[in-house]
Image (cartoon, rainbow, N blue to C red; front, side, top):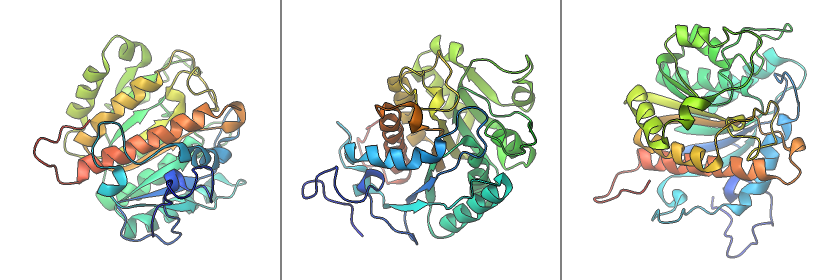
Length: 319
């Protein structure tokens, strides 16, 4: 299967797959499989993330496979496909979580990694369960306005503020090798970060990030993660709403687009085994800038996977 050739077919034509990748509903032998998770049953405030994967794919026709000054294109280096969406019930979070976990485990049985497009952040727990099934407890780089280590509330065990608490409790991630970046805003209680910090998670608040260059935070990530297999989770609300208004729980005072994309360049120095881009809710952004940014983040993550896993050539210093 081949990507759609944008020299032949205009970028607004054909069925929209992510970055015009081939659509393969039974992927096998790929380096990274892009998979949609259209679900917002764990959302606590503004719904709409169920429409995120479709919006991201629609905007991804803008993005080519070759970055400026980066030499070979991403898809000249690694094999990727778009496997479509996981069919998730909107009515029962337990069934949705189990369905997502089993689907992602099946993807990893025949492929090396996945990039999940959300959907609300609750489904990152399903992704971490699937990845840990292959690699054991993994390191985590988590970009978000919120720590997502809250307990259940409103009777919802798997809401979008819980995935990393569950993952720590289930011992499928290594909290000593976890970095949360961009944390800010308001919380129900003043001790809302005690759980994460008490388990050894390194939290870089938005204020701390602002006081340090991107390069210093990237060095912290490299030091913290080391050579461990690492899962990278990007909640789009890590960005200031000026850059990403289309999300369920926007929090002013966040990172800029340039800062997030620059920070993600350190992922190629690590050993990434899975990714997600979550919480895009296009209903709150009629201009589509949030979806454009989400697809740029996804493209960056795919390129950094290629950097991490392809053989390095002499003198290759592409970021």
